Length: 330
Image (tube, rainbow, N blue to C red; front, side, top):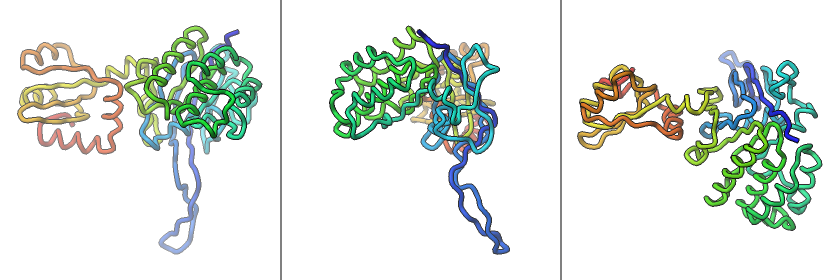
């Protein structure tokens, strides 16, 4: 049986961790929030698609994912999770047995019982997840060469991560959340994991959220992409639409700067008389022909490059410098 995939919706969600006391000029003290992990997040996760959750370290990715699995409670705002066919019945995941039974969050550690055999951890998850596939779990143990008789404490970091990946896939939860699960895996194991995600997703559709810093490797999996930056949602769009948000120009400096004039410059580098700029948006009608005539090459922008450029800490400053010195976008 394949359950209906779950979607999720966050409205004005704020998450703050910890407080600290501050002193006013008058000498009185007050409590102030020490860390804001998420700041006014509005986001809808489409059911039944694979969504990439991207962001630099500290952007709020793990906090967002833990909210959906009821590991964290928001400071303010609302969260609703549920199947696509019953949007009006979506529920708050916090301390909600129905939601938690249908949401599987796997973090790098795999959340394993260190002093129990891997087989015992798998039995625990099999009892907790109504759609658990024991045959799939056994096959993946062989594929990733994990000895189920060993304790997690005796496994390498990569093998522990592989166990987490097995749990995430074998649970077949309507909402499957994989937070940096690949860490520690070698390249062949990672690619085998990605292939298994696509194969099992095709046979048993569900909603999969995948957080990763290896954007170039996993970009082919994504149907939707969410980019978090400093606790806010910077972008949340279909992958094809996001990849059309930027392009590059490479060629003689004067010709490149003429074509780039009036556009927002995301990145600029120069080697001798040749300049390459990364611009936000898509080429305008007729721009490609004009660029070719001027000896300028127009290139597409991979998702990883666009992500890096859009989340640069000093993006605005760089854009201003480029505009002031070279006639680029403001």
